[in-house]
Image 1: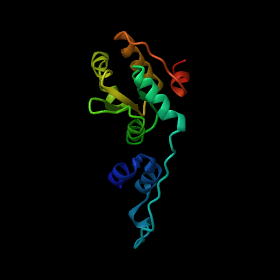
Image 2 (image 1 turned 180 degrees about the horizontal axis):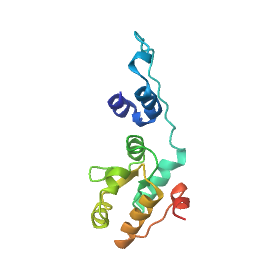
Image 3 (image 1 turned 30 degrees about the horizontal axis):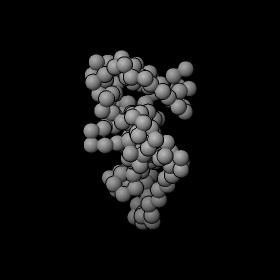
Length: 149
C-alpha cells in the first residue's frame, strides 16, 4: 500500500500509523476474519496558488529554497517536486538519517539536500548552523522560525 500511495498519489502511508499501532496491539483471535476490502481513500491539501510563483521567483533570483518540515519524507518530497525544489542533484533526508550525521558530514550534505523531513527544533538548528558555517545567508518562514526562537 505504501508503494501505491507514494507512486500514484504522492501520499505518505506513514499517516496510517495509528491503524498499524492498533493492529499490532490486537490479538490474532480478536481480529475479524473474512473481511472485504471496500476502498482506499486519500486526500491531498493543494499547494496555495501563490506558493509556486514564490518558489519560481526565488529560484530566478538565485535564492535556494529548502523545505524543513515535520511531515513525513514521503509526503514532503512530492510537495518539493511540485515546487520544483527537487532535482537530480537534490536529495531528501529524514530526522533519523540526520541524527546519524556528524556536524562535519551535515555540512557536506546541506548543499545537496532540498528536504529535511520529520525534523525536530534541534534538527532545524543544526541545519541552519551548517548552512551559516558555509557562509550562506539563511532566512526562515512559518513554523520553522518559531521553533528556533
